[in-house]
Image (cartoon, each protein chain N blue to C red):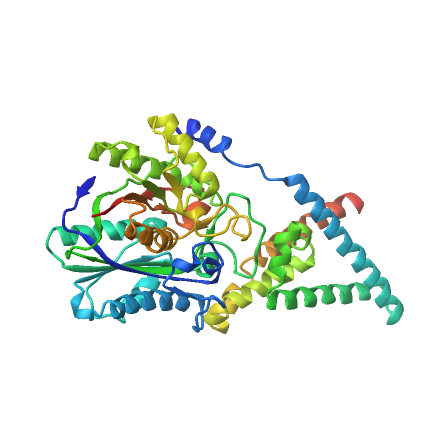
Length: 330
Length: 145
């Protein structure tokens, strides 16, 4: 399903990152950087993630001299069980709240919902935030954080950070042009250490449907960015697109999981992942390059493995989803 | 596209793990650790004038203490990433699994945090350790008399 928007604009965006992201190649583009540890002055990893989200939303409001009353809707999601980081963040804001979850594709879901509210005239300004925290994800989905078992080359490294995006019906330099909502795809992969293989078909499906619905060619976009497929997932997607749809993802395609860290120097295996991965790359570096008009038409495709460890233990294969959002410089 | 054909795409784009290299590293480091433990065992017997069995207990205690301290100061997980199974398979890995779980759940309190979760990883080892000891003990009794 593709929706075209005429009145949805990005007013501003705010990014906060942790120390691993600060050691990566995009460090200078983030609005706020934590350099020391991943606690950010809080007692636990979970509270540290709430801290990040709260700070991103507070700072974007202050930066734009807005009050809580100026925002019609707050949409937020993260990777914690019961999207706890978002819910505990939202209790600090006197703004109507929608909590959403699509794992690492949450930012895409948020942008599509927020844009639809604005386009429909139901809201003037919508704040969308998302976060992930490496240690929270390790504790929740894998082993205790200090356990550190050796991982296969295909596993990815959950990014730490929070991103807040302010959408508005007031004209700005970048608009949300359209969104395509993805379908849940499952190609029978059961390996939790190979999320690139799990999510690539979902990305392929939504890219294909987006191009079909908008009657566009892949070369229409200056840049196409998938969320967190990593080195091997990126190759799988390119192979899959050629084999299934005969679409060639060429030089205008990249994966945010490969851009956030220095893959040669940092211990991140196949690359970055997590709900914060794509927005950290897009709403810092790419956003600033778009403002300079280096890229004019960008398709972002956050990808998420919407699985539960319980189902994985019960030998179910892993479902995945992706959303496509088209950003255009006016 | 069916799942089988997709799996072919995945397989041709997925790197092979270097199991032989990992096994050699684990063998060398694990073997060195074993040899050093044997030296320590003889040392304890000599210095403290203990029978072999009792100094064995002291060696185990020494290894557990060192591993747990290394976990607590955040070094053990870095070592494990480098030397693979060499530190996970010996008693050091068992100690590490308990200490790391205890550290992880300390924020949830003594009972519902540490108490409920300390054997999260080690529980499997304990359960199947006891079960296999029982089975092998029984076999030995029946065959060896």
